[in-house]
Length: 166
Ligand code: FES
Image (cartoon, rainbow, N blue to C red; front, side, top):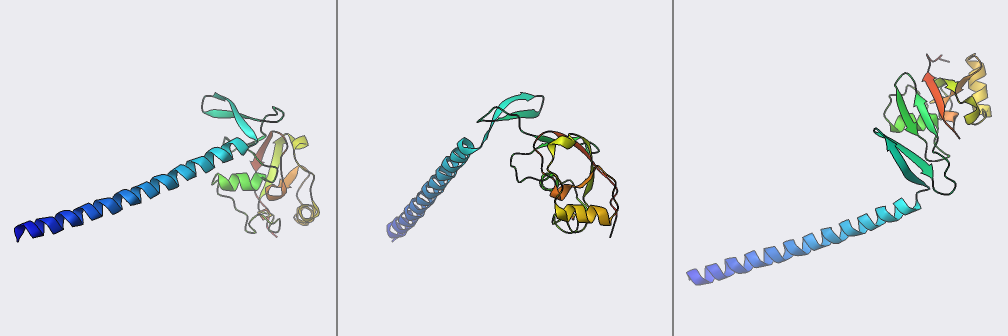
């Protein structure tokens, strides 16, 4: 009788190990396909690492060796690279968790994401009509932009300013 119990127990243990191995094999396969996907994405990225200065990565575009534009947030002493044309100064700050105060989620309606461009004003897109309307309505001086409506093509240095409310 004891032999039968041992036999059943050994069989159960073997079955359990078999399923465990199968499960691990599946996880390994999933992990491998995830790694392949990441490698593929890395080769498709239009940027490459050019070098590092301390902890700052210097990236350049693969096709023409142009450096990646950087937004420098002066009050926070933080630099953030803009990898995509669709990045706005707002979306970059949001991704970094800088604690933005805008209430319209970057739609250009609230006017609370006002910034002053300290350097590199030539490296930002022109104001669109939505932005012009809000800036006029809130009577902001020249040089102030809504960072949710501002894309960059080169380096800029900015400061968040005290926002006016509507
Ligand atoms: S976040 Fe509301 S206007 Fe920019």
